[in-house]
Amino acid sequence: MVFCSNCFHNLEIKSIIDERGLLGICPVCGTKDVKIYDTEQDSTLLGMFDNLLSVYTAEDDLPSNYPHSECRTLVEAIKNEWDIFSDISDEDILNILKSLSPTILEDYPIVFEKLVGIPEKYDKDYLLKNSILHAEKWDDFVESIKHKNRFHTDLIDKKLLRKYCIDISKKIPISKQRFYRGRVAKNEDGFPPSEMGAPPKEYASNGRANSDGISRLYLTNDRETTLHEIRAAEYDYVSIGTFKQLKELTVVDLKQIHKISPFGVDVDCTALAINREHLLKINQEMSRPMRRGDSPLDYLPTQYICDFIMSIKNEDGTPMFDGIEYQSAMHSRGSNLAIFNPENFKCTYSRTYEVKKLHYTKELIGRHKS
Image (tube, rainbow, N blue to C red; front, side):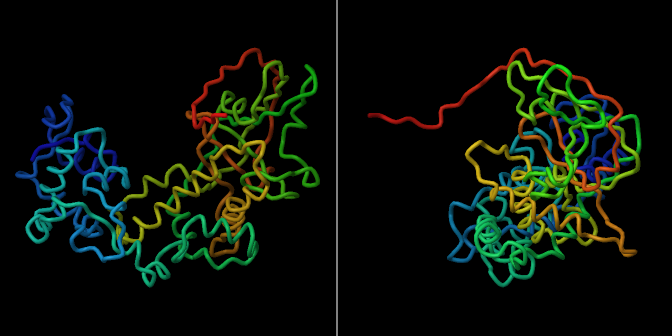
């Protein structure tokens, strides 16, 4: 079969095709002047999907307690649970999987034809040893930390969580990039740079990444996201501080969870498949907008995760991470940073704006009749 690097999102596969392929027109996605790969001419990618596909079991062979609602086609599972393919058809994905996994196609062809599932999802013994949340669900963790045991929960496998945090960490080098923080001001005078940093600990209130009394610096990657994050209203005066980074930072980038590759050396694809759900939930909870009626207790799960990430140390005892990056729920094109040590940034200047106009959208979620 012939396909090209543009048929994939996965960087490892793209790099192999770009290195070994020949320029041509892709018969799958139609891209011109792109590196194409022919399975009849090159065997480098053959078997690359074997470990990943072995995670899935055909419905006929799943244990009796496995819910039918959890079953899906192999293509649906690969598309929805892994960031491997670009926007190509289901038929093309299936053909690529078959062409790159001839051994599985011969030994277990039913996996390509029937609905599939992951039996370990409902194997308590396996989950106790290989799941971040052991044999529990995210909601069980939330209930426990909010109402049972807040400081010494044993529902989290800290060793596993540490490993995955390292997998999605990244360096932020010192550069000309600037970051922003906004504050609603009382009048048009706004706030000077000296008052745009993290709040003093005695004024630090509950946030996604900090408990009462713990001061952390929340920044965004652009001014527009800042306005959304502080929920500025019409005619508000808003001061936006521009921050310069003072040292190279290492952060856990929760936005990259879906990009953890199943093709890395010694990757346990089954454990990764199970824990991706938990990791994605952490990212969703970090990004979830808080409503006026929500309780401060709703912050506890992400506060626990952030405190744990802050506690992770290098071999020399120094902190491994300087903060957490996550998707903004208030602005789809923006991202946020929660910085553990506010001294790593300096506000160089601030500007004050008056919000002139807002645009509201709505979605019907229910109705009542008298």
